[in-house]
Length: 434
Image (cartoon, rainbow, N blue to C red; front, side, top):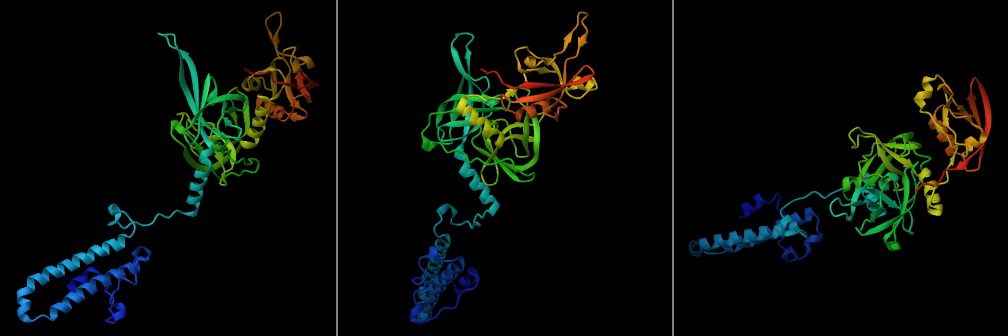
């Protein structure tokens, strides 16, 4: 049996015969507080001590007794060995449950960057909401008015007053909007206002303040290509999902829902799938740097090119929507030709197709395109610059106007016929949208 114990354990320790070591268990209990090395030594002591005592007693028996009791000794020794092995298992298992007591598992250790990502997701998830767009439709048979979900997206808590920020295209055409918080409580939402040109909308819910955790607002002016970003949302209707990536481009331009371009857009390779729209794009500190708004993909799924509206743009829009329910943006009050048409004419600028007399441009005297009595097309004014800033296409025109305010007087240089003219125009607010 001693040989068996020596084979079962790697290296049995030397036992002291002094009275101080007569009970090797008492000085090492409890086993939960021992290291694996100490536990192994303790088990060796238990088995060797138990077997040693049995063998000592056996050696003191007479030959006659030994022959009569050999079977009993063998059974007793086997019992001692089994009990020792059972105790060994309990010592090694420690405080784990019975199902995993016989499994040696390596402790899960996350790298510092992984821990930071997990912490960022846990801290910011309560700020992200699920937005459902509900449309009212009449049943063809019963003529009953039904509420049917026609789309969904993401959003985030802006403040403790219950304002929720999302994309305009997430709620477009909705008769009702519902917002579901991270704790799965759902509230009816009121549309405070929206900016269709920049694809931003603000909702409001009546929820307890202790359930509303505003997302930390960051800055997008100092972003760099290559820095890590994190997108949280509800893609395909799934619960809160985190995707990671880097900023792959800055100052991109995309077309908004109204056709008006959105400038200074953030491009990222973080997966932005349907349902992520309206969700936050965060930096590594967990601060909001943009609203996930679009992807570039023929299939409609993420292909590594996603776009987010920068938070510096969003902040100004949200402030106006919360205060006034609308965005006051200056306009010239013209309709202009597509850029491709102007390029075919061999000129650079914005061709005015229409300038209503009651609009800013019409009041200032800009000439629209028209036809003469013979049906021939007479080109209107071609805008070449505003306040000395060159205008080559429609995007340039919008970019300059976005930097102006209602009531500003600008000097517009136009090509009229074969000569240039400078015309002062006072910008007016964009008419209210319903």
